[in-house]
Length: 134
Image (tube, rainbow, N blue to C red):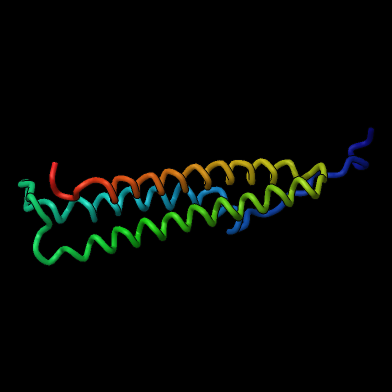
C-alpha cells in the first residue's frame, strides 16, 4: 500500500479541560493534604512545644480547614464528572481515532473518583479526631 493513501491519525491539541479532567483530582487532594496539614497542626504548637488547645487567635483555622476540604472535594468530583462524561462520549462516538481520548478519559475517571474518595476520607479525621491533643 502506498504511504500517500494511508490516512494520518487525527491528532488533537491538549486542552485545558483534558488536563483538568486527568490532573484535577490528584491536584485537589495534594492541595488539601498540604494546606490542610498546615492549618490543622500549626495552631497547636508554640515553637516546638505541643499545646493542649488551639493558640489564642487561631480558632479561625477550623472553619477554613472545613472550607478547604469542601472545595477540594468539589474540585476532585468535578474532574471525575468531566472525565466520566468524556468517557461516555468517546464510547458513543466509536471512531477508531478516539482511543487516546478514551484512554485519557478512563484514567481521569479513575483518578478523579479515587482522589475524591481520598479527600472525603480526610473528613473522617477532621470530624472524629481532636485537633491538638495527642
